[in-house]
Image 1 (cartoon, rainbow, N blue to C red):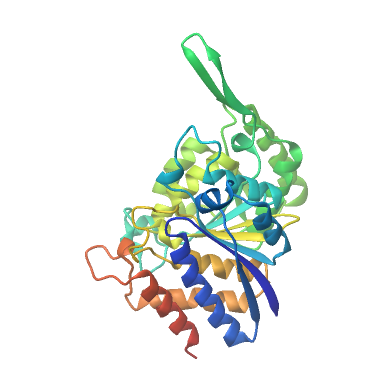
Image 2 (cartoon, helix red, strand yellow):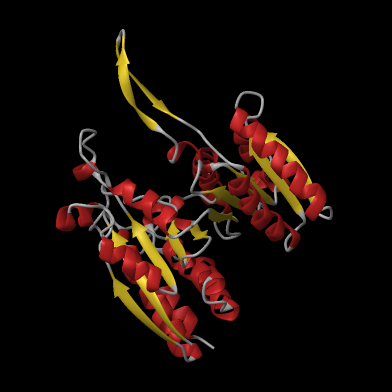
Length: 358
């Protein structure tokens, strides 16, 4: 297979972890006889510095022409001025919208080798296997927003807005995923307060009854879900929710694994290619120190192979290699507790070596 993959290393630790994922993709290509062509483009704070915008037109054009996109992380204190004309995160919102990436898939499955890395007891998290599907191009992040005069000075507002079509497509994707897993879908909303959630509940209930009667379906309010994730995470299979709730809940869910440095994500939709990234941020406090955990980005590369290039065996080889490295006791600083740790580059090399073994 010949494939074009656009790399958006971004800011902070982004370039460091993307470099290790590229090394893994290169050894996979060599082992299976593929050819992956990589093109690196600016995005985020570095693009603001070089082009005056977090998502230059040429970067977006390259992404549209690619088979898949691998992103590191964007943002940092340098670009955090609230009065700035634009911020790195605006590039993320724009690329999702422009590429039609309406669903963000975040698997949360603690490694059996790292059950003690989580702040939760192992008997709570052991056996957890959740696929979160977060709606990505609607809701409060894309609704009307602004400021206006108020008697006390100013008031600010953000509008949460969803339409039937936006809900239908992400629910169908989630239900199809549940059908291929343990046949259980949970929809998270706040229908006791929000009108947008009432539409979510209405549309989801109709789709599940008419199109997925074989999939068990339940509803959980978002505040209850925040508690259940910490008390009974094994009870959930596929969880679908709107943009803001999904953003918060998946970051909470990352603590089930012990570190954000272990969790990948895939943003899928139409018409553009899939975009793959770790769920962690740019971590500017450790950038350049060589201690960032590259496993989330390496596992995001596995998702890239599975979802965009339809290379299931190759994706499984990466995931098995990561499992082997962890089973051998190798840890980066974020998951090493008080024990010895390896560097970002060493961890990437260990995965590459595991892939190269028969």
